Length: 153
Image (cartoon, rainbow, N blue to C red; front, side, top):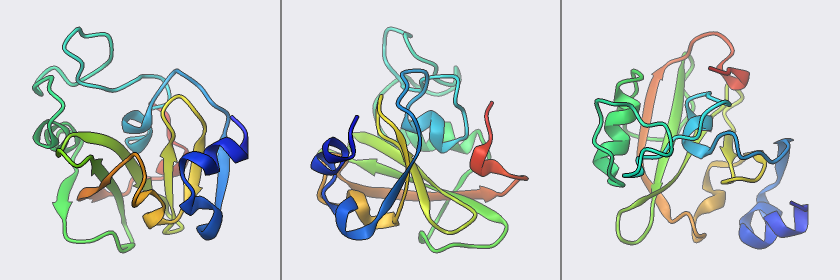
């Protein structure tokens, strides 16, 4: 996708700056990218087309997404401020409370997102506000292990 198309979808990127950090792919999505998985598409679809942890209900609820991240040692925290020694993720929901997106904080303090089937980008925390992704519902964190910024599972 061209920069113009990405900026058309997310106009706040123009003002805050961003970097495309990998090409588009259908191998993984934003949920997988948030946990460092670049080989699997994560989503709790009822037909089991995509990966979802077997012990977590397959429904598109904030509670299910929180539980999926909790089994990976994430815990709910108070804010998105950078904390040395921790990696954070943000879970976004639409106006109905349905999860739409997740992003991950990098060791630089900036954030990274996979844009659906499109590219991965590095961006400021607040670029998705007012977009199709909705708003941040929950911030979670876990201890940072090694170089999670480029981790693949």
